[in-house]
Image (tube, helix red, strand yellow):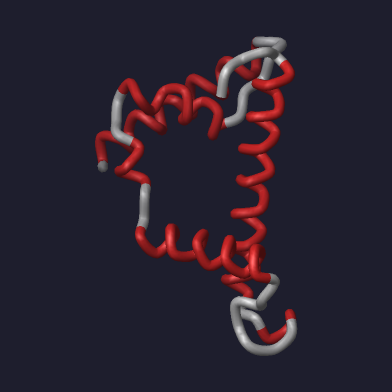
Length: 107
C-alpha cells in the first residue's frame, strides 16, 4: 500500500501542475480513477466497514427508515458526515453516467 500511496502523491503533483497551466481542469478523484488500473487493483481501496456504511445508507434511503433511533440531532455526527460523503459520490457517479449518455458513450 505504501507504493500505491506514493504513486497517488505523484499523481497529485502532476495534477496540480496540469491544472495551473491547462484550460481543462481535472479533479483528484477523476485523475486517480483514470490512472488506477495502471498501477494497482481497486480492491486495495475497499474497506469492509465503509462497504457496510454504504449498505446501511442505501437500505435506510430505500426503506425510509433512520439508521439510528431518535431524531436527526441524536444521530452520531460521524454518521451524518459519512452520509454526506456517500450522497456526494453517488451524485457524482450519476452525473458521470448522464454525461456519458449525453455524449453517446457506452456505460
